[in-house]
Image (cartoon, rainbow, N blue to C red; front, side):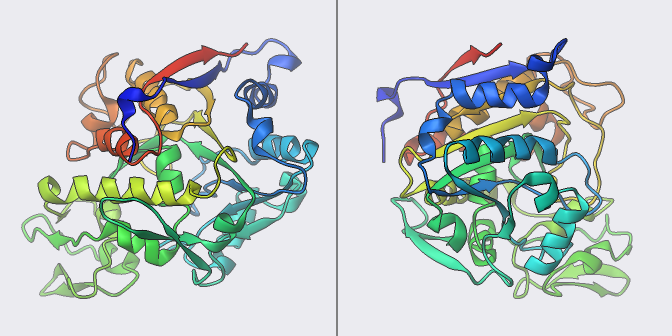
Length: 376
């Protein structure tokens, strides 16, 4: 554990999206951030370098652009690294539940060798059985189940689309580490929540039955019901239910969930001191994670790109920049639209994104204290 009060503020580097010349375009901004943040030191000659992204569920089109990922691939190659672009299989059913479907979805979204200049590898293997148990000093875990190819990589660069999330409040670098670098069993360890149906809200549409990966959701007298013995807590039913008839006890479940996610993030970077780097992309800030098979309208205008070696500080800076904006018109954000208001808490009132910062500091993942450095 670490005492965050003794830590210096972390530097978070920021580039806005204004461009009136070729050396100001978005690819150029990524390169400038890479250099300014000192990311060159994270990649040694010969390193097998994992570039962790989220390929987006089939139907989502607001994921990070493959051309931006290629810019990072080229920077790693220039330093003698051997990059591969990677993600892990999902706990829920969908287009990324196994490596075959996952790679097919990635290619459909433009993530292939011809575009990226690097191979696409699903880090936890064909059926999510490629796992390394990593010891950590956690409150909930002594060991966490990290995807084998991420754990074995010599260096790790995490590219995250910063956006909303119905359980975590927002998804950025910490979530991309914690949930995104875990095997399917590790994702289940983190969720460990069980859903129930509010019958008065259920309209019998069967959407939960369609997406449930374990058959826990079934119809009972024209209403949905959840078998808690089969439920793995993935939350997919919550995401697709049009009437929000699914619920958990948010007051007792959400804080432990967030703490478990943070501890898995710690496991993903464990054993890589000085060998990890993080980009967050504050564009297309949608209400939902890229795991949903759609892309809703952004809740705030595009802001820019940020980079840091501290994932906690990076997420804190992104959250502050989002909250400083006025909401876009005609978006899902019906309450809290003014500058200074917490946009994600207004979207998902039960979430506790603040736990990311408090527990991240407590376990030594990073600090929420940051200095924002503008990169021209």
